[in-house]
Image 1 (spheres, rainbow, N blue to C red):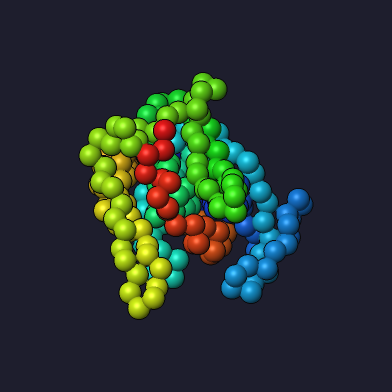
Image 2: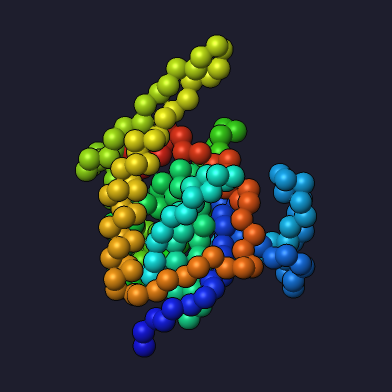
Length: 213
């Protein structure tokens, strides 16, 4: 059985450590919420997704920032959408080189709060084993360190992850994208049912992302 081209996919975002699917109108089990744009949305939440990764890509967005798209197949094709420089995407890409692409993988987003600080991440599991990061502080394998930019005119200091993001794009996204395209021969345009928005736009990687084990 081979995968065939599809004209749509079920889109999933990540919000508060869970996968979320949005709908334009209420459906059974959906929760109504007013988002940051003061718009009513209807959502269903899921703790994990399991299937075979069959595609990865990026798309630009002036309004929400560049997005990482991860296509997962289990009869249905799902598209997980994350902001490319979010902790979710960064930790996913740090782990992806350790994934066996010909086997199902369970993808589990997470949010934990410790001492008032929120920590966002994504875990990948295969054969009931949580996969380790490929890029770590002890074994960086070329990944650069973030730089601390001093705030000007009383503004707070900020971590600059642009070099980290560029490295992950060139070293992980591009080769995996090209390899998965060649193997699976699928091309999936954006679903007309997708409602992109503020699902993870405020989740920016912090210093804890460098050195995850």
